[in-house]
Length: 386
Image: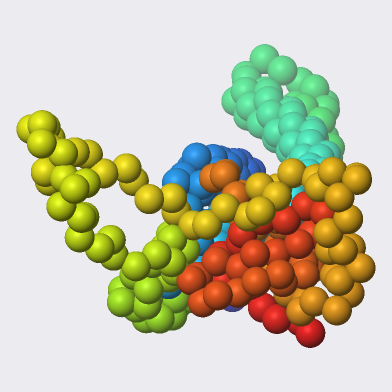
C-alpha cells in the first residue's frame, strides 16, 4: 500500500517516531493556546464590565428616548461582555480540556505501540544473532577445509613422504570437506528460517504496528482539526450574539424623538406658573442696577411646595389623610425617583402611592402608604392603578 507508513516508510522508523512525538507536542500547544485565549476573553469581559460600571450612571435616569437608547447601549454591551465570558468558559471546558486529554491518551497509545515494535525488533535481532553465529561456524569449517586441502596438496607433491602419510592427508581433507558441506546445509536451514522470520517482520508484523501508529496519528489530527472547527463555531456564535445586541441598540435609537424628549424635560421641571406680568409703575426701583429696571429676578421654584413639605403632620392635627387615602386614586411609580429638591417625594419603582392632586402641571402631589409623608413626583413617572 502506497499510503501505508509500514510499507512506504519501512526504513524511516526514527523519523516516524519523531514526527508523531512532534504532533503530540503540537496538540499540547493547542491546548495551551485555547487556555490563553480563554484568559484573554475573561479579561475582556472583566474590563468591559469595569467600563460599564464607570460610565453607567453618567446620564440621569429619566424616561427620555435618548436615555432609553443609552440604557440599551449599556445593556447590550453587558450582553457582549457576557458573550465573551461564555466563550472563555467554552474554550476552557469544551476545547482546552479535551485537547489535553487527547494529547495524554495519544502519548500513552504511542508508547504502547513503540513497546510492541521494540519487542519485535528484539526478536528479529535475536534471530539475526543466531544466523550470525551459524555463519561464523560455517566460515570456520571453510577455513579448516582449505587448510586441509593445502596440506594434502603439499604432501602430494612431496618426494620424501610415504604414500600412507599422503593418504592420511587426503582423508583429513575429505573429512573437512564433508564437515563444510554439513555446515553449509545447517547454514542454509538457519538462513531460510531467519529469512522467513524477516519476511514476517518486514511484511506483516512491523507494517501492522506502524499502521496502528499511523491510524493513531490520523485520529489525533482529525480530532484536532475538529477542535479548530469548534473554535470557529464559538466565535461565529459570539458574532451572532453581538449582532443581536447591536440590533437592540439600533432598535432603541430608531425610537429616539428629540421633540418628545424636550416635552418630557419640560414636564419634569415646569413650575406650572405662567409668565410674569408687567410690574406696576410704583414697583419699578429708581436706583440703577443689574437686570431689567435695575433688579435681579429670583429663580422661580421648580414646582409648588406641598403643604406638609414631606414632614409628618403633627399628631394633634388630624388632616384625615389617613382615612381618605383608601378613597384616593392609586398610582404606581414606574422609575426610581431620587426627589432631591425641596417638596419632592423620593420613591422607588413599583411603589404604590395615593394621588392627592394632579393639576396638569407635570407634577403630581402624592401620599405614601404611611398616610402622612407626601410630596411631588413627576407625572411621567407614574401610571394610574385605580
